[in-house]
Structures are given as C-alpha cells and as structure tokens.
Length: 474
Image (cartoon, rainbow, N blue to C red):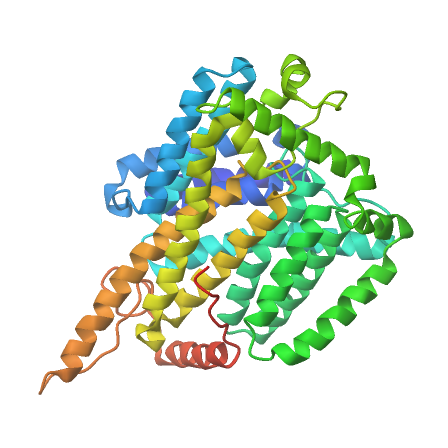
C-alpha cells in the first residue's frame, strides 16, 4: 500500500516537475534526504526514484529557460568546478580505476544537482522551500533517532536509512550536526508558535540522536555546534546554565559503554580505533608524498598492495578517517588545496554576506541564514576531521546555497540602495526594498493580504527579539 501511494504521488508530481523544475529539485532532495522509498516494501524500495526525478528535472531545466537563470560563477562555484575537474584527472591515474570511476560518477551526479540548485533557486521564496525540505527531511530521521535512543536507553547505535549516503552512524551524526543550525534558522523565521515549539523538540531529539550514534566525531561536532548557537543567542546566560545540565542528564541515561567510548578521546594513545585512524593518516600522507599531484585516486586505501607499501608496518588496512587526509591521499596536494579553498572561500563569502546584510533591517534574514550556514560548515569540518566523508551530498548542496545567497544579497543590496536614493530625493515616495518571493516583487507570483503582511511584521519583530548575532569573519 505504501509503495502504491508513493508511486501515485510521484506520478502526479513529475509533470509539475517538468513544467516547474524547482519542484523537481525539491522532489529530488526529498528522495535523496528523506528517503521515503526506504519506508516502503516491495518494488518501491529499490526503484530508481532519484534517477528518474533527476532526469525529469534536468529535462525541464533545458526545456523551460524562463524557470532558471544562467549558472552564476561565484568564486566558490569556480573552485567547486576545478575540484571536480581535478577528481577526473586523478581518477584517470587511479590505482584502482574501476572503483575510482564509480566514486567519480557519484561525485559528478552530486555536483550536477548542486549546479541545478544554483540555477533554479532565484528568489527568497524558492530558497525557503529548499531549506524547509532539507530541515524536514533530515529532521524526521533526527527526531526518530532521538526517540529511539530515549526509548532504548541508548543501548543501540542510531543509523541512517538503508542504502543512503548517511546510512553509517558517523555520517548520520555529521549530517545531523550540519542541519541543526538550519533548524534554528527556520525556527526564528516562522509565524506559528506551534511550529517554533515543534522545531525546539526536533532540535533536541536530533541532538539526542547524534549522541545515540556513538560517533566520537559527531559528539565533538555537536558540542561545537551547541556552543556556537549559544554564543549567537541573546539569552546566552540562561542557555549556558541549562545546556550543561541537559547534557549531563542525557549522559546519565546512556549506558556505561557509551561513557567509556567518549572517554577514550582523552586516552587516544591507548585506543586501538584511534591508533587505526592515526595510521590511516600516515598512510594517506605517504601516498601523497609519493604521488603529490594526483594522489592514489578514489579508494586507494582499499588496495592491500598500497597499504603494504605506504602504510605503517603492521597497521591494519582501513579507510582514511579524516576528510582532509582522505582528500590528500586520494587527490594529492592539489586536490587538498582546492578542497580547503572551497571551505575557506565559502565561509568568507558568508561573512561578506553578513556584512552586506547590515545595510538595512529588510536584509536581516539573509544575514542570519549566512550565519547559520557558517555553523553548518564548521560542523562539517569538526566532524569530518575524524570521519571519512569528504564527498557527501549535503555539503555540496550547502556550497551551492552559498553562491545562491551571495547572488540574492547583491540584488537586495542594490534594491536597498535605490530605495535609499529615492528616500533622499525631494517629492519621491520612499520605499523599502522587497525581497524576491515577497509581495509586490516583480519576480514573484506570491500575493498576500494586509493580514499576512502584519503576520510577517510580527515574525520580523520576533526574529529581532530572538535574533542571532554574527560570527567573527574567521
């Protein structure tokens, strides 16, 4: 029954995805992140939903030119493209070509949909849709994992949906830490008290789910994300008092095996798993020194002969548990430099967006979104420093969102400047800039009554009351 319901839903939605490719992008995100087909039985479980939706969306993108903009070559997009090209070069010289080519194909598909996001998300309304789909999709799994942890007393590891890119407990923890800041953003800018309270619950349960994964990298990332969100709150004193109490309470619910696992962070030199990570970093460094330009190619760590040649003597063969060392070993020093530049340029680009957003109160929302995306990138770095996940889909989607909000910010600031000029001109009617997706904007089909405008004003006042402060530029 679930399979049939899903089939009928997709059959009814795909024509809309062709006419309006943004619907196809949202549908693709739903299948990639929510994985509704993993909650069914029968043919729907392994049916190629993601591929079909992607094909229809790309076809609509080509057939409906008015629904998209040209690909905006922001610096972060240029770097992402150079990174993709370099992975192709590295793959052509890979030690294990067949495996490397499969991984390259997966990365290529991720990048294509990231470019689609940049071209289709052309106003604030569409940007909000994308963020809500991301939050809702991952938030469902986070809330489910948190409830599971509480009901079982943390006796089992929380995992992601089968055959998804965040199926592994470590990947699940990383992704949840990256999405929690976006949950906070949508919570601030929602009118409904019920939705705001529901998002509080979702964030709390998602945090519990991260603890329930038993991922030490995820635990460190969660602590960093929580600390930064507290610093960005105006009522930080109360939160600084309450947060440690909540963490202590959750820790008391977890079994002794969890406490001993987290405690092993302090005694890494005695922990075999931690020593295995360090050995994998040495292996990656030796491979990069032997092949400094292109590295050993994707999945070089799975080659027994390479481990015997470049790994520490007697070390167990394992994946490279660090996004930085994995990129170094697989793509060489050039690949690592491009990867680091994507992170740095993306973060600094968001810092510039926050600075531009100070031009007026109408731009506060995009500054807050930029600030939360910065926290998401920090979560990726914090968790990824100990985990082998440099090529996960949500990271490249967030990089695409960096380019999107940079473009929207430039447009909004220009509008705000024109409105300021009009305000200073005698006899002119002053007006505030209207964001795309809001009433009366020339690019928007959205219309609203005076009552809805009043609701948005109340939401803006609530956002300022619960506002989030800027991060330092680095």
